[in-house]
Length: 70
Image 1 (cartoon, rainbow, N blue to C red):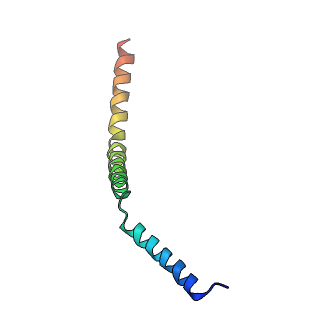
Image 2 (image 1 turned 90 degrees about the horizontal axis):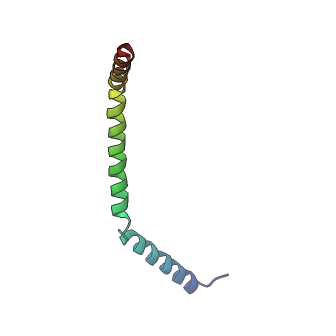
Image 3 (image 1 turned 180 degrees about the horizontal axis):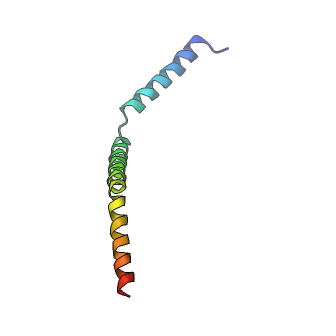
């Protein structure tokens, strides 16, 4: 069984490690950029899904015009 001073020393090392992790902001920018990229991607998908019917109609019209011209 560990004695009290050894347990306190271990607890102190764990506490210092947690404080170091909490103060570390090196990955914060990466997370923010990833969130912004995700939001832009979701916006693009929403916009393109709304336009998909119009795009399909335009291609069908072009296709029918080409086939009637030949």
